[in-house]
Amino acid sequence: MLKWLKLYTVAAFVVTLLLVLPASGALFTVPQGGTVFIGEQGLDITQTGVTRYETIGWFGTGINVTSGAPSATTSVDDVKNFYIAPDTFVGRTGPWYTLPDRKLAFYVEDPRLTLRIQDETSNFEVTGTTTWVPKGDQVGFTVETNLIPIANRPGVSMMPVTIHVRTPNGNELAAVSNYPLIDIMISTSPFSTGPVWDTSTYASGTYTVWAVSNVNSMKDNYPVNGKTMTPQTGNVEILSSNPLITSSVSPTQTSVFSTTRPVTVATTEVITAATSAVQTTAPPTTPLTSAPTSPLPATTKAPGPDIVLIAGVLGLAAVILYGKDAR
Image 1 (spheres, rainbow, N blue to C red):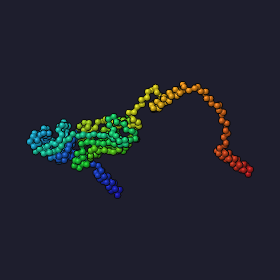
Image 2 (cartoon, helix red, strand yellow):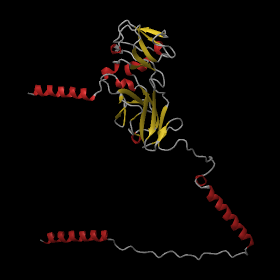
Image 3 (cartoon, rainbow, N blue to C red):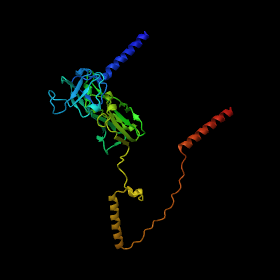
Image 4 (cartoon, rainbow, N blue to C red):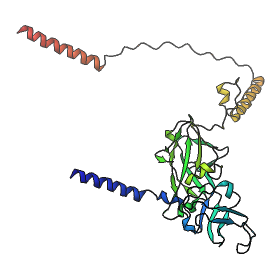
């Protein structure tokens, strides 16, 4: 009985994984007229109508596909393991056709990927010189990309993007505030995570943030900023105070003057000047002398309740001991 229970448990776990996890195995299957991206490898393009050892061609703009000659061609050695090589396809985006019948096979696109960092608490974008995030604010990420057609391939509903967060000490985080950053599955663009990073529990300092899409080894083959990855310049400074605000007080000034507002100083100077003017015209006055003060009479503190209680307890103890001795 126990053996069958274990088998049922394993089977239920496998079924759950199949229902929850995306069909990532179909990310490489390209339909007829589908879109592929420069850098992808291991693609299965059998559904596009291309056959093994067939030649495909790109006509570019201004050339009649029906009667004109292709501007570029390449041979397909393996339709189940096709590589959109940068050397062949960069600068040759758009439709590619089978030859010699000139039927549409697929579209080639240059990948595009951007990442925006948002302070969801204070409602501003962390970018450029505005990188300071007050410690305790909630931070979110927004991914913008043209890679969504990958999520529309047969058997697929989403595609993965990974966000990298490097801490001030050089470590990389797999998650922020329990939100996983590896293989975030998206199906729309722009895609927003919402407020997922609670900065109150993270050390102060500068965090480096960037995004990568390595679907079908795209980034490995075509590591270009803005295409398969974003620049590693998305810095987030988690600090308790704004680093752009600095004190303008000179070292020779004291804390009294550094905290006095200018209007208060100006008012004090006016009052002093006015007082000086009055004193120069008023008749001399006899300085006031204060009468000697006699010291206050000494007071005797009455026994407090604590003294009375102790004395009573000692007296009761004495009575009891005396009674025992008398017997």
